[in-house]
Amino acid sequence: MSETHRKIRVLIVDDSASVRMTLSEIIGSDPDLEVMATAADPYVAVERIRQEVPDVMFLDIELPRMDGITFLRKIMSQRPIPTVICSSVAEAGSDTLMQALEAGAVDVVAKPRVDTTQFLQESRMRICDAAKAAAHAKLRGAQKAPPPPINVEAKLTADAIIPPHSEARAASVRAKQPDTDPIICIGASTGGTEALREVLEKLPADSPAIIIVQHMPEKFTNAFARRLNGLCAIEVKEAEDGDVVQAGRALIAPGNQHMLLQRAGTRYTVQIVDGPHVSRHRPSVDVMFRSASQVAGRNAMGVILTGMGDDGARGLLEMRQSGSHTVAQDEESCIVFGMPKEAIQRGAAAKVMPLNRVAHEIGVYARSTYRPGA
Image 1 (spheres, rainbow, N blue to C red):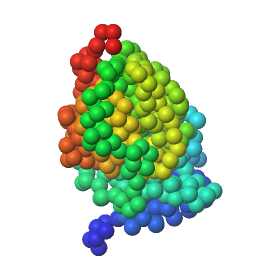
Image 2 (image 1 turned 90 degrees about the horizontal axis):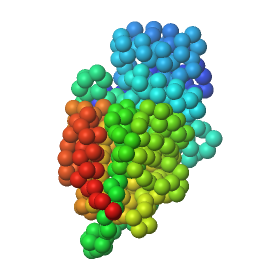
Image 3 (image 1 turned 180 degrees about the vertical axis):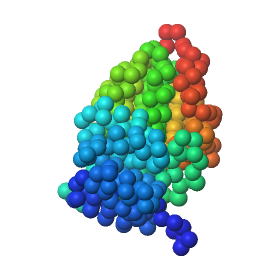
Image 4 (image 1 turned 45 degrees about the vertical axis):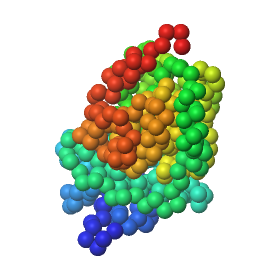
């Protein structure tokens, strides 16, 4: 970070003194971030905001004097601030989680866990990345500068989970792949919860099979899937190991675990595995995309949506090289144009389009690959 680079200023709103202290220590440890102020309730937060407007706000949902969702709605209607929900309440309540996202929150993280060094380190990475992504998110069409590059020190690739195919092996697999029903693979991060809702709500009940990686903490993915299941014509569920990938169903990778596509003949299932963070994430879009490139190839479509970083860019390129149809969301409709930008720059996307055309493109792809009796 250069001396002239201004740090991202963060306001923490949480009624727990220990959580405020832990978050402050985590955020303050990153050279790109600083804690502007902390507040125990929304009324104190308003006074802080009157003195100085933060770049990002971390907000709990259960707060004294005014709940976090009501406060978020008021802030977004008066002076929008990129907001990350940091709460344990949303883990169990799908309605609560979706209300927060629909009210304008750009991301959601679990409260930091300090029980072991590993969990604390994972919380630190997730919280700091969420703060940086939120700071560069577009709210109500406002343009933000591109996010700073992510520190990729010791960053693992999908090789840590799935060995890559050699060019000869990949060519052999492409040549031998029998036709199957189409599989749609979607990856998203910051801003992706609402983007996914927009896409999935438009799909008919007989839509092609879909597998999804959305960067989201453990337990939150189940709440997210349940809420989408109540809004969409297709079935939406958090993936479990061995789940069948089939038309009319979308499977969302569980938080804190990787999801791989598997195939036996013309039948697909998902495998849920543990493992290290890949491209700074678990689940990783790269892991899912690579598995699809190796077992589905031309029978798959890869879609990369809004999000910070480069998770999915390498995997989408592998999908395209294996014969898959590949799509990236365009800059104008992205909350954060990080992951799609990386994919586009690598030549991974055959098409670039606004979010409101993605569902239509899925339908076009499905019709173009329809094979009676396949």
